[in-house]
Image (cartoon, rainbow, N blue to C red; front, side, top):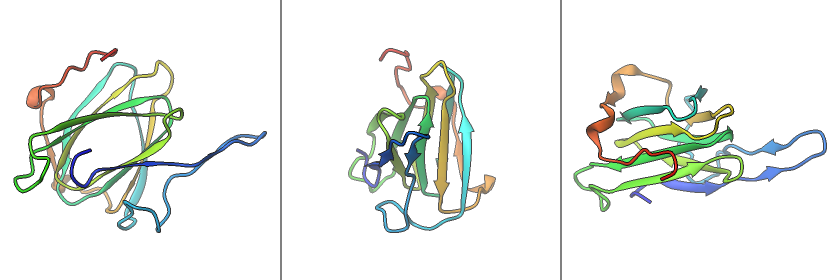
Length: 146
């Protein structure tokens, strides 16, 4: 993984009446603080282009569907500068993806059903701390079967 990025397996407790899917505890690796929690959906095959938070740490969980996250590190003093990482998070691969500030991220819906992510962020949303870039900013093969 890129320097500072964590992929943490999460507990999923199966119960007859419905499952319990853990998200984050204050004692977990990757927990920094609580600012806000929000859900985002993405349709099958759609790609939300590159975004970089300059101060926010993201903690991303996918309780429904399947989402491919692609991360790019252009931080000048990082040991993984210039590297690209891709990971898929879903209920079948139930993990929390922690993305520290200054890492570029784009993501794609892979399920034809509801693709839902939960971000447990350490800061409240602030449009002034976000950088955005077009999809071609980082070369990556977004073919659905790649």
